[in-house]
Length: 598
Image (cartoon, rainbow, N blue to C red; front, side, top):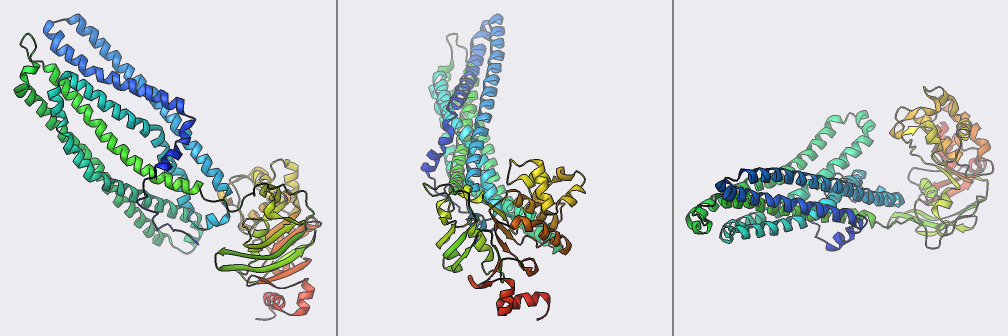
């Protein structure tokens, strides 16, 4: 079933797909004005910053020899003002970029969340939830940062290089060639290291995804872990995953940090070359009319040389981000492109108010191709009839109610309600008229009243309390510290299994459904509470079609019909008394439970 597990890496070396990049630009569209302003502010900061070496050259080569103190002071004030303008421009650009980046992140996450809510159960059954979270959180963060910052920076760094090159050529074409002489060495280093750096970054990302997947799995299963004393063993697995992550992180970071000393060394060599060639080879070019060597020109050239290598290094990093972002986008769009297998058909109509007649017409179903779970199941439930589904584990009982709720589509055949094929009606209109309590009781964070109201938001407090009273949950709720306003944590920690089921039962009954589905609804309720619940729901079941999956057969003796499901088929059906007289499969199961036969 699972396409991968926490210890299986996702696809590596995803090829660069420009179409995916172009597709991502849709998220930039609504922020075009912000992006343009950020570009203007950044361009202004770059140009203003490039003026300062020219100002220093003018002061050193002209004003100091002339002893023009007044103009030196004026230029000093101007230099101070220039730096303030640069800070303000960068601050404005930063604010815009943050807002834009968060806007893009919000838009992508919203699209992902909306799509994830539509995907059917089989999508979540086939992959670790931690890896889904990694795509929604980590990958989207990286993509948002790239689209809002790095794309602009790439253009700006290219412009910055051309501007610097222009200023250097204006100062001294010959010294400009000296600066450019180091470029082939830098390019060779980038060419040799960037592919390895990218590969290590991808491996690091995969290992981080594995860590997140295993962490999410362990948090969800912490009770089982402690029950089987698996803490030390799981710690070993987690440390192994962390070790893999750390290994590739360190490999990538060694290459990243190797760039700085190499660049710094190259810069110092270029600095020395500028002074040596300027003083000994190109001296004539730097002598002014008074025969004085223009030291300011050399100082300005070294400053521009420093700034010239910065954009080169940053462009290399942006290239890495580009390739990583392409891989992240591939995985994000994999989620967005995941087909919604259970969705409204084009032209689907709302299901009108129903009486509750349910028909399974030669239904065949398989989760995995070639492995049937239901084989040609046919039956009809009259409005108000209560049907119990019993049989061995894995026989297909829960599958029947999942198909009725249309959590999955039938492979062959049809499921009808009041002669309406449920595949032809909207999901919302179908499920609004059904009350479903699944075997896995889920309590949301909030309070008890909010959990009861979850399926019917317009219900009053009085209606929520009435539903709780009907299933005899009111008594234990009122004895809690804050009653119905008692806070509930994720998955209902702090509540007993029986209390969680009673709250979930009240939530289901509050929706006042025409069809009621209970999947092991009383499995965690003690015998005394079960009796009270059975009494409480008896009136509510009257007039409603109900399907009850139960292993505890004493809870379904009064159902109108009992269907014994075995090997994906209805092996026998009838009332409790009829099946007991038949002395078939149901009889053996019932007698084994009450202990009369082994």
